Length: 333
Image 1 (tube, rainbow, N blue to C red):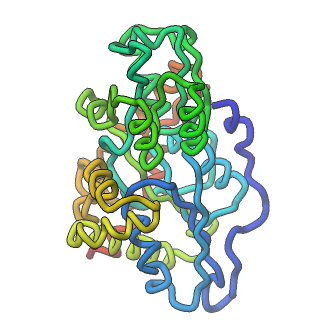
Image 2 (image 1 turned 180 degrees about the vertical axis):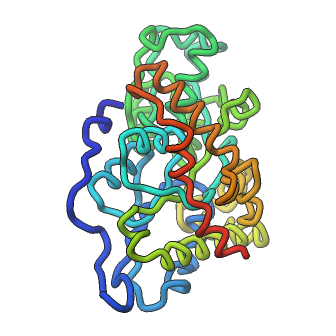
């Protein structure tokens, strides 16, 4: 965590180029290399469809910590964050707003263990080397699972690695277990790994993880209508995912250089929430009454405080202010 918690200072520059009357000349979208509908939006050019005449730049980001660094450096206009990095970013005062649900996480994220090192329980992780991208949903779930088992993380070596680097470290035999996500997760499974725990199982234990779309405050203040366009494009990508699973699998396979079989399987590990449903109590809620995501952010931040990953948990009001459903409301109405 310390790799980015000390770097959350906002620079003065703007990630977007401005034309005074016509809106931004360029919009920069940071996206995670994850199996979700953002890849559909990107592949089908839906952002350009909803923002004609605007240059759209996509920047691939390694994980939650990297996304926080990109936000702090003002390198993006839009991005995506899981609930742990969201809690961290809000606690550190990063100038961002939450706009929509990008995805709910199931077995697309999981802990893989080497079959030849005898890990049958979390207790068996003691003395082992485990990798996870610090500040990510999977790092949070690893710490939460250890806490539930009464295991001190200091009893093992936990490495902060990006998903691509975890795959490399796994191939060299440098790590015994790792909690990260597809498509790199599959590389470890096919190289002597076994799925030990999934984010979906952790959700059933009361620890849901998800990714939320974010926008920089300054961009939102200057171009609220373009925030609606961003949400509309992503909602169209989500609807395409839900309505056209076969074609979506082809897109995921193309974007992530996977076989069609692997892309189809990985899609089943990620839930896309229809945009109308996102405005219900279970998710973001409405402008009048925020939904369950506030509760998740509160619980996540309180746990991070207990693990000395955050100095103080933000208030409920702070998280309610972070979530801004009005853009989604404008799109689905």
